[in-house]
Image (cartoon, rainbow, N blue to C red):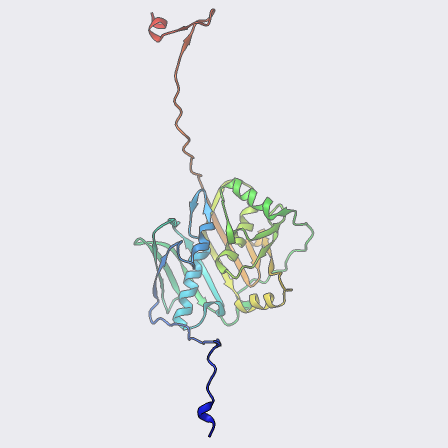
Length: 300
């Protein structure tokens, strides 16, 4: 018997894949604590409008999408969904320090959702899953590339900065665009919030005004995850760029597996910058010899 003389060699560590089931929630209510110090939300620090760090409109919708995934016990990125009659009622400012608490409520029967912050509703709408997202889309004929994308990434965000948008990080994902905002190219950074926000930026560029506009509603938003990831797999390596089209006649934005229909925006006044205080003094100078005189002498 030589078995007692043979021992296992434990000098090396070998890693194996660990599979975990997606968590499932029984109710349609979920509380989200948002902090820019959290690695999951740190990228939102790049969404700055008129000097304020605002929670992206597409961020609200992604939270609802995630909640639906938790209710079904599936990864939300594997579920195709349709949003309808979305209304953005109030903006949420993200503080540099501290936590913002959002309550997401989704009704199982009707699919109506509501996001509440500080006891006040900030976003409402409807959501439902779909096994055939192609039937939910308009699937229009995309315009031909007659006009070159002359605006580079630097040109594009310089124009938006003049309008009051100070995007940074993942929210500067538009790599090129036409001057009228009818077509562009968006980089895919494996982040749905930033990707859909970049789609909205193309629509903003097409508005013939340098006013500051914010989204207030979306008629319909279709997210076809299967089509989106199929397009990514068909792309060449190191080139995950999606073309984006803004069709004005249909009020439609299309890119990848996402179709945004009926975007509504409102013009808001820009904040007045408080300048540094200026201390002024008044001196009376003689008209001829330019000799200085006091106020008392000038009055008398």
